[in-house]
Length: 389
Ligand SMILES: *Cc1c(COP(=O)(O)O)cnc(C)c1O
Image (cartoon, rainbow, N blue to C red; front, top):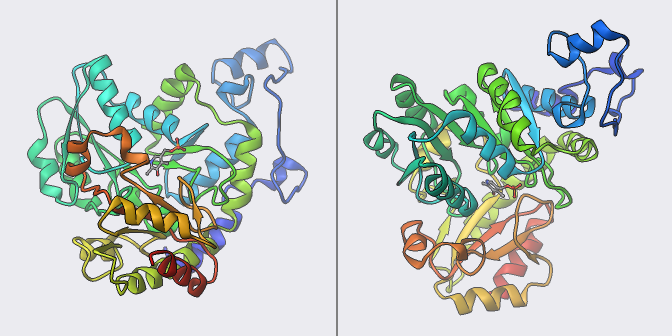
C-alpha cells in the first residue's frame, strides 16, 4: 500500500453510512441490551446463526465500527476492541496458549507485558523464554516442542529495539507457532506486521491510535480463526470489552492518525539527530539513525521510524533534573499523544523489574523515554536541550 492511500483509508475505513441514516460520524449506541423482533429472530441472533446484537459485553454497533476500521488499517481479516492494551494482550495470549505451553518473548519490552508473562508462568504453568529480540535467531534457538507463541514488540518500549518480523514469523510458521506483534509504537501507518507474516497484532490504543492522552483502549487484529477464538473465548470470559463511548472516541481520532504519524515521524527524526550533540547525552536510540543496531531491518519493514526516541543521560540525577526543568514538554508517563512526553524509565515504568532484569533489558539509570509530539520541532529541541543544562 502506498503511503498516500493510508491517508485516505484512515479517514474512510470501516464506513457503513447506509446502516446509520447516512450519518458521517458513526453514532454512539449506549444500549447494553437489544430487543429481538420475534422468537426465531432472538434464537438465531443469540446463537450466532444470524448477525445482530443482544448484549453489551458481546457486541455493540459502535464497537463493531471500530473493529472494522482497525481490521482494514491492519490488513486483517477481523479485529476486536478492548478496554485497554493489556486486555487485548491477555486475550491474545489466552487465545494461543494454555497450561504446559511455552512462549518466546523479548527480554526488553513493555514491563507490564513482561510481568503478565511471568504471572501466567507462576499461575498457570505457561513458561516464557525471554530472548534478545534484536536477534531473530534467538527466537529459533529458544523453540521447544511445546512452544505455541512468539511474542514481538517492535519497536520496543522503551529502547526502540527492532525485531525482524518476517524472520521470526517465518520460522514460527514452519514450526507451527503463532506470532503476535505489539504494534503500539509503529501503528499501521508505519508498519503492517500481518503483511510480514504475523498472525495477530495487538495495540495499546491508549497511545498513538487514541493520540490525545484522553482514553484507555486496546485492539487485537489478525487471522479470522484466531480472532473468532478470541471473541468467543477470552474476550467473552474475561470481559475486557470497550465502552461504546470510548470506541467512538478512538474512531474519531483515527481519522487524523496518518497526519499525526507523519508529523511524529518527522519531529522524532529531527530530534534524534539533534539531541546527540548535547555533551551530557551518552546514547541516542532511534531506529531511523544509521547508528541503530537494526537500522537496516527497520528500514526494510517500516514505512517510517515512529515518534519514540530514548536518550541515555548517564545518571538518574541528570534525568531527574531534566524533567524538573522542562518548560514546554510534559513530564508524564505514557506516550503517543500530540504533546511531547518525557519520562525517566528506570525510576518509573521499569521500576517494577529487579535491577538485574533492568540490566538485561538494557534500561540504565539515566535512560529517558521521549514521546516526541507534534509541536514545533525547534521548540521541543530547545526545551529539552536547555533542560539538560
Ligand atoms: C502502554 C503499552 C501497553 C499497555 O497498554 P494499556 O492501554 O496501558 O493497557 C502495551 N504495550 C505497549 C508497547 C505499551 O506502550
